[in-house]
Length: 250
Image (cartoon, rainbow, N blue to C red; front, side, top):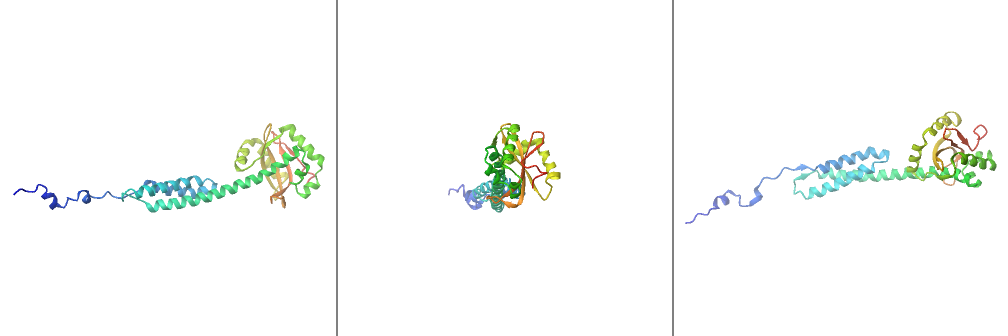
């Protein structure tokens, strides 16, 4: 009788092939860990308006980790980490986007004060007066608006552009240089608190100049932003060309 050469294999229970091989130990997906790390980084980053970047990276890595985990046949773990990373990443990316849009809107609305210089240059007396408070209008003559425009033009030339958003403001502030020193003088001695004083960069033919706007918090324009009590444009050495002489104005 012929002996079955494979009988010992069948008896040993190994004829099932790979079914009886030991399973590879599960390990946590590196992508899942990275997803959660980036998404957590988005939490404090959203406070400085850049949380959208790590948030989106975290969400992308989390989705990629989930795909790889589902295809690993149990060799990869970390599904919970990946899901958490996706949720946190998307949540704080959305929040950062909302904050960024809000800041950009604020920058655009603040930039509208640059229209006062453009209107003066164009001889638009009513355009200038529409941005001033009642007290400023009472202290100002039409002739002075024309003189102020001429004084600015002699130093800086014509208005090229005023800020249209947050990026324009940031870029302009960095270009102001020594002119920013005039802000300290104005805030300490000319228009101290509670007056609200802010620098607005405006691009002229001859460079970027600082328009100091003094806001009147008791009155608003059609845009619901404060009217202006006074405005002054800084010369390259920091000397200010005021529309209304602070010693005589409101």
